[in-house]
Image 1 (cartoon, one colour):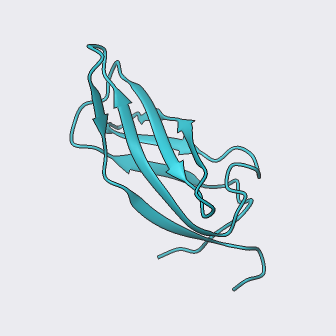
Image 2 (cartoon, one colour; image 1 turned 120 degrees about the horizontal axis):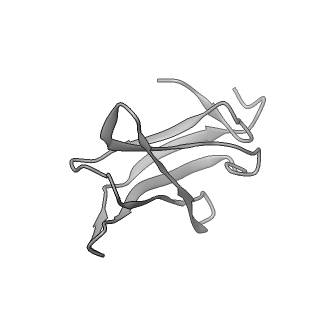
Length: 97
């Protein structure tokens, strides 16, 4: 497994679902290590419409070291909502390892 770091910007968060996401509004929601909640607007993976991703774009996207929790939140065209299981990823401070 790769190591990930606070402030890293060459990183993609990708989540797989069991449904086709075409036409849906996609979010990758998170809880950071201090318990703050937020979300990133996600995009459908062009080669697999059941996957969504967010490319980390600024050093402030992942700004704290520790365990982050991520999950998918999908609002379909008919207004139904799908919520995925949580995954956990540890982010190291630069120089920590």
